[in-house]
Amino acid sequence: MKVFGITIGGGGGSAPLALGAHPTVDLLPPEVRLGRRSRGIRRGVVALAVLLIVAVAGGGVFAKLQAVTAEATLAAEQARTQALIDRQAEFGNVMAVQAEIDERLAARQVITSTEIDWQAVIQAMRGALPADASMTSVTVEGASPMEAYAQPTAPLQGARVATVSFTVRSATFLSVPDVQDALAGVLGFVDLQVPSSAINAADGVFETSFVVHLSEEAYTGRFPAEVTIADDQPAAPIDASADADAEADAEELQ
Image (tube, rainbow, N blue to C red; front, side):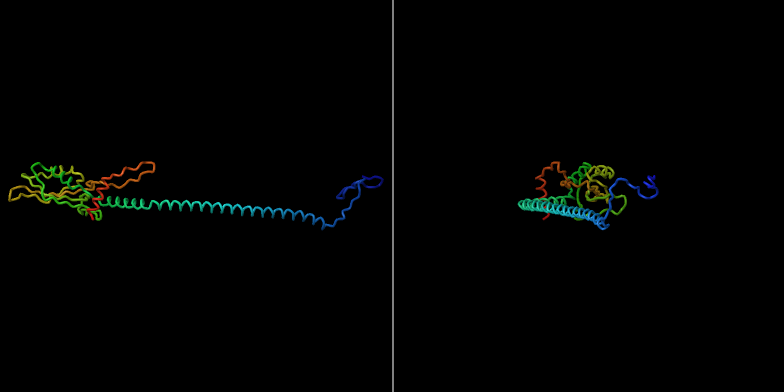
């Protein structure tokens, strides 16, 4: 646009001419403007550094508090442990007696683990014989707590833990199958062997030898292994008579 031959505004890349404005000139050197910008940057860096220092210091204080708390807890637990130890020492005699009782119970269990009521076994075998027969020459042998009983090497023979050998005298010849069926009712019966059967020439009586093998069922099991009882279940009462029997057995072994 031209006014009186003067072009106002313009095209291209030139800035338009502002009419009526106050003329201004920026006389500040570029270094001043850069200095102002750098001061803002420095303030931000300082603020960030301060925040970082505060965070590190806070973390250190928190860690120190945690360490102090842990040390206090450890000291309290150590004091409690020492108090329990001191308390336990007051019952030293009781603990010694309890340990001795446990040892006696363990010894009793081991000693009686292979116990067989031989009197009852022989009486049961005698009762299985015919009325006119008598039992003589009875010998018994069984396992011991320290040594296992020898097992048979021949096939078709059952495991055994004891043997009863005896001779039966009878006026008539014994039926071995009938005697075997009768002896099978004896507790722990495994098998029966008949080594010999003959007539005694002196008195004309039949003499038959028997060998009976017994299994672990023949054990009396007077003192079975103790069963662990849960905390919420009452313990079984102590049998005083059983303890007395165990002490008597131990004295006999000594």
